[in-house]
Length: 409
Image (tube, rainbow, N blue to C red; front, side, top):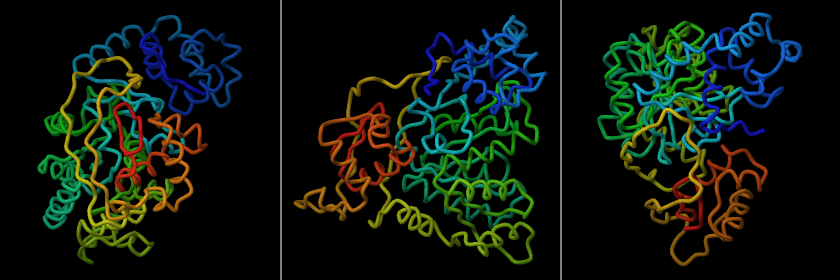
């Protein structure tokens, strides 16, 4: 079912998320029943009462919203969107984090400050305690700085401590970084990181699933952690007590079939308990950035010695309306050089072993194709198609075009 909106009905989407007692789960059930926000607000009470697990308060509030009771809040939301230069991105939008589309109960949409580009499709989450020691800070700067310089996009939660250090390490090497907020854009948390948020938006993106006035309450941190792990190939835990939010993020990563990495620490430090437990349970022990790079290359089926480096793209002016994919690419992006896995003179198809890679290669022989069409034609989730296309691009077999189109190199 396609819920991608036109600019005209973004207002109804905003009304829907602003309605009290109507959370993401309720919105998904409402969309299953009525398909669009407009239909939801046109539905009579008797129809709303048939939606599973929809509370009386939610039904009452939806009917009140339909009568215009939230128009003042809507105006306030639009002012924040304009002032903060935000965009609203939906799962169908090429800027929506592709791995996030595949998790259970993905966000119905995200508010975004900044820009997500093709280079951000190799993301690694870095998390840890707010009360970190000098050793963990130093290792975060060293390891994350190298990872970002190699082309990985660093994802974290903008918090004090390890989160902030990870974002700054990426920025320091002109790398890409993405932050997920546990609140709305009017109540940046922590407030001391307001300038850091704006800096991240120039070399990546800041994302939130919450309306602007949402406060950073405990359940929002829990949900934020799920998005941090779900949007990434893996999660690197630097320093974290057993009962910390970073450990919750690691558990989400395991549930989402993501890689988990951990930095060992001193055995007498409380903050070492989390990483040590993860290592005991099978997480990858990290001594250096190379440990993570090696494992991610293995996950993607890459055996060459370097992850292709990426250069940040210039920011563009944002619009407070939802974006749609461009129907036609207007220029080609720079392509990686062919790797040792596909030496000159050897037919590209003969080097492929994965059945899906072979199908993608044959499908692209006919010319450029949008990633959504590839997923539909081959019957695989977009996230899986994106992962295999990334591998083929790194091998120099496939080239990525603007607008999420792909062609043979």
